[in-house]
Image (cartoon, rainbow, N blue to C red; front, side, top):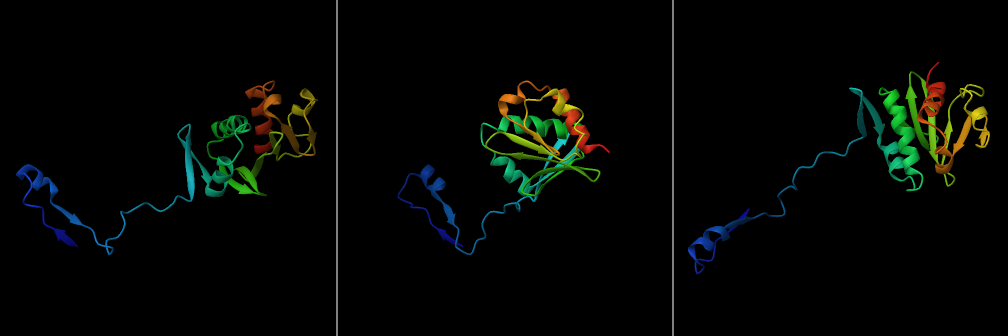
Length: 162
């Protein structure tokens, strides 16, 4: 390191403040922590893990679909705080005890996948206007206004409980 002497022609109080040390190119940059591989979220004193790829997907969800996604995400992790969230088939997958629930964002809203046909807890029958197919329910932000959290939790439980 090279020291620079203060200019003694300045007033004494400025002279003392002007003394400084120049850092050379050999000085390492300030230490920064390594990037996290997974984020954690605390729910009911248990920690859920969201891996980096899943978090990148979540961060990239379009603003019009984000509130609905955040609602489902919160319900899932609030009910299953031990859930691990990773990216599988290009979408977030919530894994609990070997069972998975997938939630993907599309132009129309969200698609929820992950239960055997007929195990959706009667959700599709109660909402005949929703587009459904084998093990899949499409839910738009507008459609979700008519679906309570209790019904969404039934759907989530149907996929994640054996």
